[in-house]
Length: 232
Image 1 (cartoon, rainbow, N blue to C red):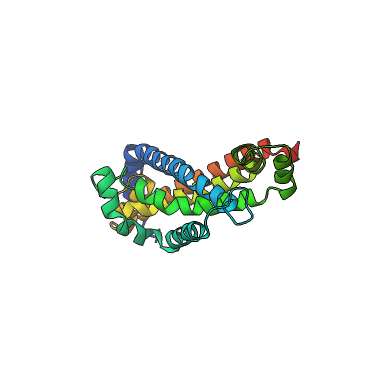
Image 2: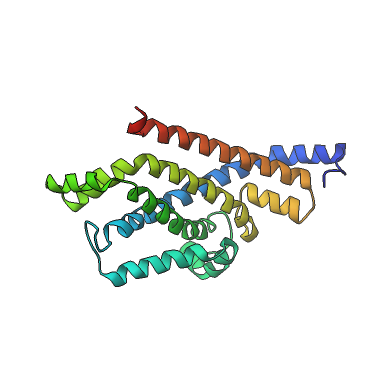
């Protein structure tokens, strides 16, 4: 793949790197962080409901509601992202006004990510000891106080760790969103590497994506360790 690299190819890659990579990097960060925020806003409450709304939870919900939530979450998680992007074109166009472009890619990214975030949050909250919850109930804490102070508070290190996983997963999705015109490093990799066979430029884009994943993972791990009471 890289056997045909010559000085002209290197110069071209350098020019593209200088002219396009800074903005592409910004677009990738912008879309990734915004999609992650929206996914957490939707997914975190769903994750909490999946735990507290159970029959033996602190705020039981009707079984049909819980079953419906699980079906929706499982269904969305089972659809490959590339197919999901196409399926939500009408919804994206309704919200953004267009189904293609950098901003438009936030919609399918959020829809693909929030069920994943919901399951991660559910997993983190289930790690909280039932004894701790029962103690809070015996002290007269309301369900909302238990959710916000005990469940989320105790699960916070695990939540941060799992949200880091979600963030890096969404970062990977942004590369695929280049197919529908989403900007960023994914668009550069697809436009130059796939359509024009300029593999050196694609390699540079991939390297930047790897660096971003390592950066997010390192920061997330440090933050999770810092707020973990068990580490103090």
